[in-house]
Image (cartoon, rainbow, N blue to C red):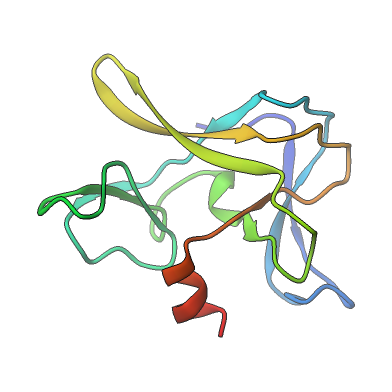
Amino acid sequence: TQIHGVEIRQLEDPHPLSGQLGLFASQQFEMFDILGEYTGEVYEGEGGSEYATYLEDRSKKYALGVDATREGNECRFINHFSNIAEEPNVVMKITYVDELPRVMVVCKKDIEVGEEILFRYSDEFVRIYCS
């Protein structure tokens, strides 16, 4: 499902992730707007890649997750905020639609046209992939 109001851009110097891709607002968003759903392949237990998020409490033996490595939408290009902004401007929230868990990307604050959309990745992710 395509997300409206965003565009994927290649990041350029002096961006700390220069050469990689990022997601930017192509329309204005307001606090609490739902940007869209974080989509990908559903998996069980451990084994998600750097594009994975959990749908359930990770401490459960068979916690479900969503991995956007091979499939997904624009949300997979949302970067971690550190060294880019003081704080993230979106957050992942789990909601249930027809009794199935979904990961929604929700705006934490107003987002202006041209602003990069940024998450707070998990401490574990930052330790493994950003150190």
